[in-house]
Image 1 (cartoon, rainbow, N blue to C red):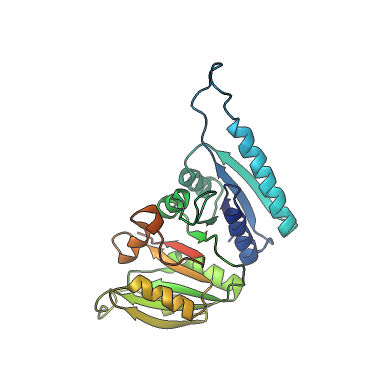
Image 2: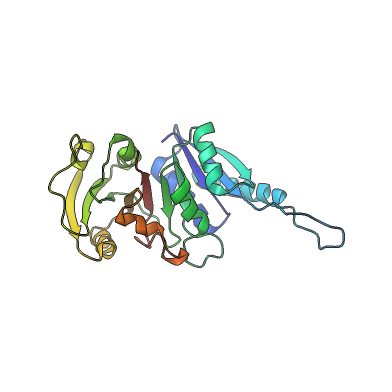
Length: 267
């Protein structure tokens, strides 16, 4: 990873996500960009109470966030971006204009009280980049075991490349969990590679989870295997797509305490 985006609302959770990224990728040959989006006041009037200068508040907040990260990480290449556009729009623009590779952000914004924030859901569902969502409950620890959930859909080198880079950077073992709601397919599509072939040079193992409550079974498997990062491939019309649907409190319900890496399925 060469360029990592760190969305922030200046909450403790967003700082925790930044620390997770720095612990995982370090500062050598990596640059980071703090990204903050805010609402621009619609209008002001002399007879109305003074409207806060949200632009100045955003810039001041970014400066404070930068100082805190530099105090934690020391020498680090760190830029700032403030915008009134939707967060996923800014992230997608930076993906192209600044060749960003990955987004790392907290799952809960300031005042969300444990619920997955709308910005996080929008980033996961709309951003073209892979996203790591770090929960507020996450306790800092070294990433040594990663779970990759495989629903049998097509995977290729480009889809798994972010996961490979994370595994190589951390030296982590990848536990590939084959998940089936019904009977597993008898064979792969012609020309498809198995996940083991795609991860040939990275230590990995294979487990199988099936049945009606697949998400619950994945949760249990993650706890039993002491997983520090759960990876899923985001593809439409897959049963794992349900993780990102429904009410805000139920979205991304795959896990509650470990970071979630959402990979992008390539067309």
